[in-house]
Image 1 (cartoon, rainbow, N blue to C red):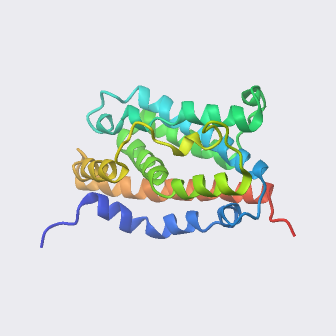
Image 2: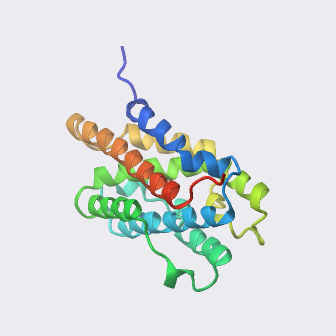
Length: 217
């Protein structure tokens, strides 16, 4: 019987943590229209800290044999996030931006893997970017309909991958890269564990956001 592709191993092994992150009370309330635009803006601000760590880390990994193939310019989100935040929070948003405690831990872990463990960085790259290409589109639709926040696309630009014409094909190619990850079986198991950790770190951010934005009575 052929071995299960590594991308499927990761998906199956982290399914519970993925589901827990998706079903957090904060995200349920946000997607259910029970929170205001301030909660969406604060969530977007937290994403900026996470993606700054991801994309600053990517700069030093482009030539790495393990992580390098995953560094794809068409995925980059930081500039889009900054445009969204300028629209949502004003031009001086960066002077006032602050990470929640869980966000700071999440960004620090990404930076640590980028500096010291390229295969671990791939785990964070996978959990974020493939999620953006999939479930992130749901958030975009809710934001546009619930708060009418866009101005020429700004406000939800983070979720628009203008340089990826066929997201389904891109995700297939990405999973093939995962299947061919240039590490041994023991290292692959460590990557699986880091994927679980990435989802747990993301869930912790949602918990902090839930504390900051409890559902209105």
